[in-house]
Length: 310
Image 1 (tube, rainbow, N blue to C red):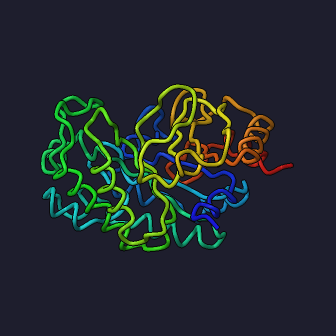
Image 2 (cartoon, rainbow, N blue to C red):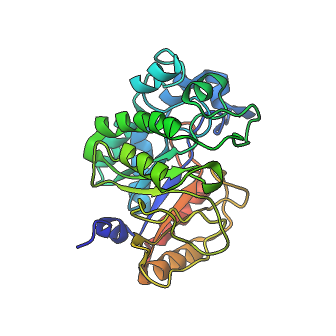
């Protein structure tokens, strides 16, 4: 028995970007819901029971959601983060524990929860980024100085608080922004991996170095599965493991970009793709657009429902 067997047996799952500024408000087209309502009210609108029901109806094997990405805003309280950054409860880390609510809703359908985190931290926020020691004046850019052991240790301690809080309810971590060009090496990658596994040593972890070519590749000795970030659903594994890590890929359904609505693949294509990947030993994560209320883009949901329609 291998520690990734449960993951492989799930075949495929859904990935959602739920971030400050990401979801548009249907009543105010073109405007971000989080900017209209504020971070706390925005997070409070997320119906975790609705999402879990849709995932169950689609037959998704697992679910992954973003804790944060680049900004200061987090989807659950975190005392360690507040202590380091100086933010007060509710200012950056929302008052609601959305992760705990997701766990309760997903447990009803036996759908494992995974969390997305980043290795480069809240680098676009002057207050949080500077206090962590990894800050850039230009949004969307990476700091000129490589990440330090001090920064990674601080930032990993924030993840460790979440990991200890939820324990074995978090089955995997997909950690973005662990780029070699940003200073990550095996020492720093190991620090990050230890942080996210602090509350569940059996959790699977993958540390992302970005898209490199048109094949899924192995990266870190700390990886339990490949991050597999790709720009399309095309690559198929030659075998189940790459350098000891379970073969896994992640891409988006949208014809536009990550977290956007609409689909460039129909249900028949995705059903065939998932089956071909699984036959060769792989797992597929599908990025979809989640709305403010926690519902999945309807067009994408229909594609997901077709995958298990053998």
